[in-house]
Image 1 (tube, rainbow, N blue to C red):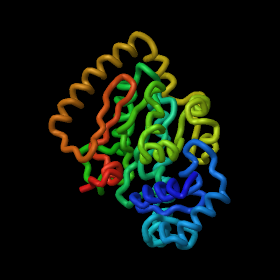
Image 2: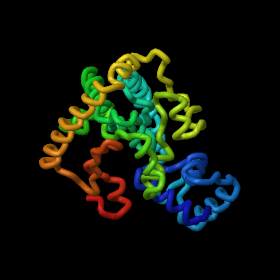
Image 3: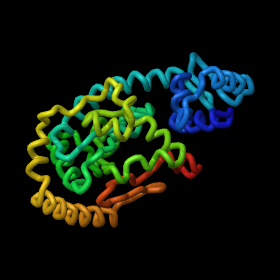
Image 4: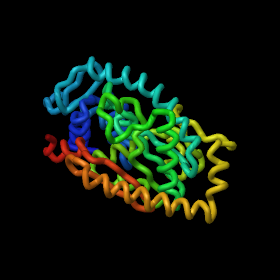
Length: 286
């Protein structure tokens, strides 16, 4: 760990308008190896004295900041988490979902009043289009699904079903740019199978109090049993054709921003029309 690494991390979080506490900074720096507290603090203290880093009331940033804004962010996040956790329980109705993670601003901490709820949905291989169909059905039925046509105000507190992964595609972000690495490192387990989650994220993530395991007799189990064979294969194929047709027709009309990411394969479905944070990293944010 170097002083340059510390400033790089703090500059990134400055883009998110989120100064960090010492424990938060230590965790952000510990991407691959555990960071010792004392050497980190000594380097950080030197950066503060040199003016490269700003400190106030136990928070650190690469830019001047308002402590009250960070505290308000935390209060707002606490309120939103209560809503998010209640609504995420409905994933227990979606067949072939192994676990669900909270992503986006909810896991990074840079929430706003209009923030929606990004999720990463880990699904059984060979059933990704089936999962997307049932997830849209369930969350649409309860009015919790964010739709593409919604404005930011309408989308607040809605579940954004924009990222589905399988075992073959999960974890690609941990070797990406700083945004992708920090996002992967901060993903919050919401619900799912403890055994499968432990296999892909490690046992430490299971200690998060926000995580709720699916019950042994989860309602989705009956649907999984009915759709695990030939009928399920046929349904997956039919849903794949329909969804890809709709996706490709939508993309012809879609207005995208910087660095859009659209994937629709048997291993990953991802729909991010505008990556504002990555645009800021590259100095191209409009």
